[in-house]
Length: 198
Image (cartoon, rainbow, N blue to C red; front, side, top):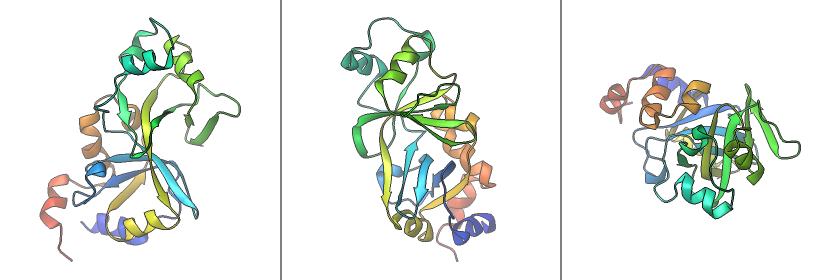
C-alpha cells in the first residue's frame, strides 16, 4: 500500500497521456473500477475517456445505421465494441487511436503515438479499412473543472500511472482494471484489505 499512498500523496503534475485508475472505494458508480485514458489535463480542467466500460445502450451496428456510413465495412471495424467513454456529452463519439491515422485540424496528438479524433470521417475510414491500426470507439467522455480532478486524487479517489498502449487498445475490457493496478504494483486484494487504514 506504500506505493499506492505515494502515488496519491505526490499528486499529479498534469496527467495528459496517462491512465487514471479508480480506487476500489470510488463512491461514484459511473466510475466504479474504471480505467480512464487522460486526453488533456491543465490548470483549466481535465478530459479523458473510460477505456474499460462497454456501452449497454448502443452497438456498432446501431451507430453505423444512425450515421449512414453504409453497409459492409472492414471486418475488424464491425467487430469493435462501442465503449461508454464517460457521463458527459454521451451523444458524441470519440475515437482514441494510433497515429497511423491523422486528419489535419481534426486529430489531436496526445502522447506516445496516441491520438484523438471526433469526426465522422474517421469512422468512414475505419469502415472502409482505411482507418488506424488500433482504436477505441467511445460515446461520451469524463470531464473535470479546474482543480476538481486534483481534489479527487487528494481525497484518494484515483490512482494514476503511465499509459500502456496494449492495455488501452486490448479488447478484453474485463481485465483492464486489474492490469492497470498491476502496472502501479498493486494487487486488488491488498487494496480491499487495507482500505480505510492510515
